[in-house]
Amino acid sequence: ITSPEGRRSMLKLAERMVISFCAGVGATTTHTWTTLSGNEAEDVRVMTRKSIGDPGRPPGIVLSAATSFWLPVPPKRVFDFLRDENSRKE
Image: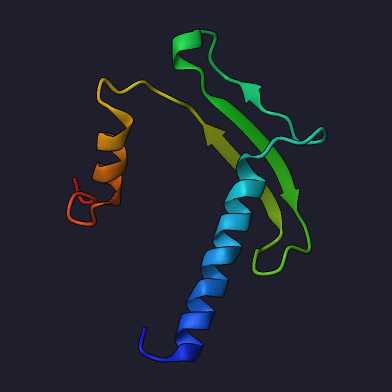
């Protein structure tokens, strides 16, 4: 990004993406997570909500899905792997 205006625009986009992500994974009393699978080790949770009047988003249904898994490595190694742009293609 070469211009200050381009930098501001990119930062605003990043801010909207973070807000959108947090809204998508944050549970509220009206939007709760539902577990799809019965095996606790392989739970997949989903949540749906309607997107109406959100700036920058088309109207429709938003589906969020989440799961977790254990990695047999230290958390710092995972963080360093994800942070390294050369390993992102792996």
